[in-house]
Length: 152
Image 1 (cartoon, rainbow, N blue to C red):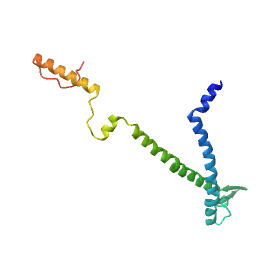
Image 2 (image 1 turned 135 degrees about the horizontal axis):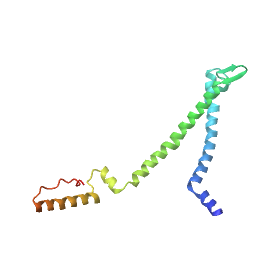
Image 3 (image 1 turned 135 degrees about the vertical axis):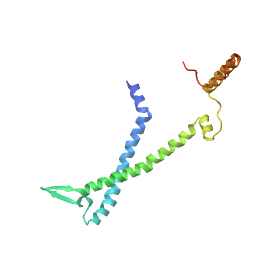
């Protein structure tokens, strides 16, 4: 029972997930601080409100509908998305492309350089079949084969 748990904990995915959660929590604190201390006051000052939550507030039957708070949440989401994309996704995609280029087989590298590749096993077998068919046809006085597979 403990062996299975140990294997589960030591898997790379679990550790990566734990690191991602810790970094995500720290990152959320930084983004919240930027939004609450820079963007929200700037937008609130444009609308002459004390903070973004007090911008575009509608009161309906005694309840406050706070469009400014929603705007603040949208700004926070967009900032998180931009940072995640440019700090994590874009560099990781670049690294994956570089790793894929390194892992290419020699045949793939030759194709990219437009160099002639040696024939595959299937191509060699087709050539041998055609040669044998042409020799049989020549011996029987028939026209040479066309190189297509015989129809059954």
